[in-house]
Image (tube, helix red, strand yellow):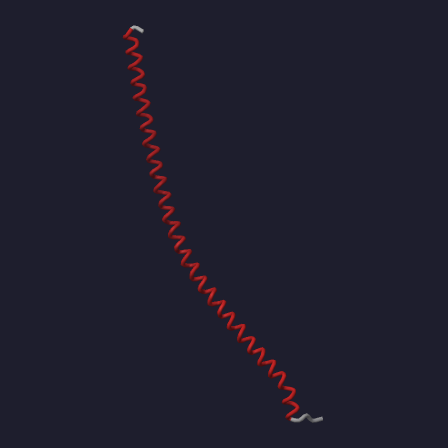
Length: 106
């Protein structure tokens, strides 16, 4: 049995329609993927900028903490020195009072 050209065309028409639908779907999917990829690239760029900003802020905070630690260390050293000076002054006054009481006959 020989099929005619028209019969073959009738058989191919649904297949051509399916191929056209697949091509359209593939094109739409590719378009959506490209949009998502563009969004991901933009988000990645924004994340990199934020990370650089955070890194700079962290570096500044680290410097500030080191500076504050120096200030606190210096304050502690001054307080310890003052405490020793106060102890010496209290000792001196105490000894003076003891000597004064010894001389006063009490």
